[in-house]
Image 1 (cartoon, rainbow, N blue to C red):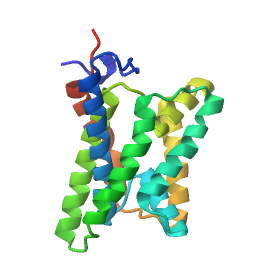
Image 2: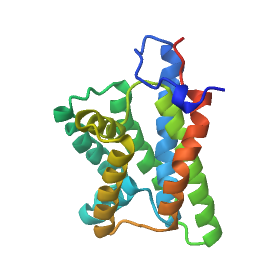
Image 3: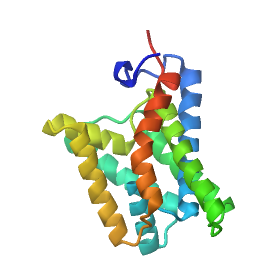
Length: 209
């Protein structure tokens, strides 16, 4: 089995296996939006970016998906000085996730029974990891936030770990100050999302050779 270190995750032209990779991209992004909705309804803590999204939602009154989409557009504008180029996966990321998270939240109410909260939390984290591996593995372009991370890494020479940590600390602190939910779910997400995504990637990453 290929390790993640051996996997090539650089974007590949849509002309290579277009149907399979397009379906993988759309399915992964829809599952990602679903996982976001599950985590928000669990009420036990969110990942850093969703803490920010929730805080801005409370501040503005706009829907969670709308805020997530607008935040993605702002992040995408930061690509310009970093000389990053969006792909079809980048634009799809903004649209599909924003729509899906609001759609699922419309049917999934906030949970107050602890058992259901835990179920949504654990399920949301697992689905989020699977979804990340699936849409990244389609190799049709990074999401806005991933592109910001890799762009800063390329332009500054700072390590990916340092850039990723710096971005998420700033985002988490800002979201918390705005009233976003920080809790055990935030810690669980931080500790498990990397290993879970890494475990899934070899099974779903598109290989062009």
